[in-house]
Image (cartoon, rainbow, N blue to C red):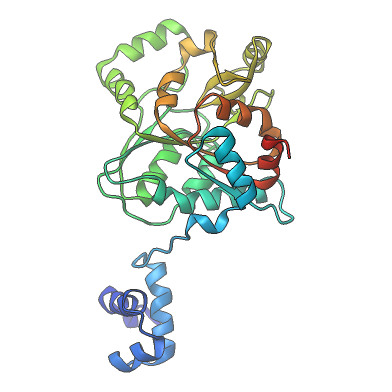
Length: 314
């Protein structure tokens, strides 16, 4: 089909309306509009490509009931979605978990919500799979400042993409994630614009994030937020996991250190106040996942089945 013969959005939308909203068959639509059935099929495909029609898969189809019920009961969660591995592992399994989380995100947020967005590969995989599903009066806020590595999924790229797909207002945090000295970080936090943005993080009703173990290759090291030595120092004082740049121990209690004084972003208390959606995959994240659940950071979770079983000790 040449560009000059491309159908208008009006006729494509009309076909989509008759098919999806009025439940007419393709043959009935073809007869009503005096078009061929292959043309109707082509227009329905175009409706998705042009984002006239947004397809969202209901979250309950991703649940493995026994594990999900176990997580909800033990940790007093609002919801749990457990994604079967089915031969998947590594990044492939993580992507499957993230695709499920992306489908549930439009149901997680509501009109008027303010959504805090963390960063990292997992959150980025979610962001690039969120369906085009406008949520009225939704605001997306960046939970931690900007990062220097252009090759990794930063907090601003994750929050911007999620906001774009949900037609939300996006408010980025106009400061670096980490400063060279605590004094410089304090000066930046005192700047009126940054101070206002940090204060408004407390307005976030909900958040989406993943987490990381305290290993030498953890994401805060990859993003040059912390050095291996700094991570080792937190581990020596009991840290087992990292959420939005903040360290927690096995019970989810904050582990504070010199790095916290140089960070610009949300803190432990503010994170806990949000209704948190944790997206997590991989057995290497077992201890930080348990810690986050124990510490009250998680209200909803999307998790792979092997990790869910390990968390429950099954």
